[in-house]
Image (tube, rainbow, N blue to C red):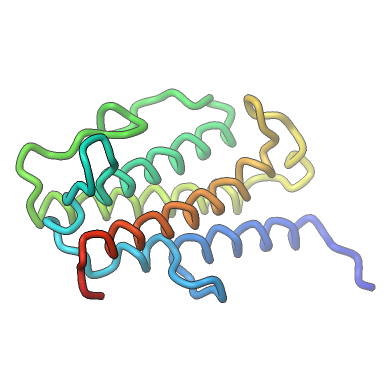
Length: 164
């Protein structure tokens, strides 16, 4: 059996991030695929009082990508995420197509920054703690987080009766 190298481990983690976010996988829709084609009205629909909207889920995912990126860099989880409150940002007062497009762009941009941080991260340091988790666990965990929320988005779409 061939020996796994440090670059192989980073490539595997990048593949996990990609499949969870925007690359085809055997498991079904990834996060970006689940969001594709939704209108601002569909994304802003609330299944019940106190339940999250798809738009809020997309911003929540963007925030956690941001937080993991900061933890990998050693900056900690806090910082200046562009939306408030950070973890579950409020939707714009007028949730229109332009605002939805801008927030999807924020999600895409945050994913690219996270991906770059992982690509540059030294594999020998994946076992180092970053808060309560190791760097490696943060990386594969954020991929799992995307897939969890992709399923949640698909469920909300079905609840709304949206045709996809």
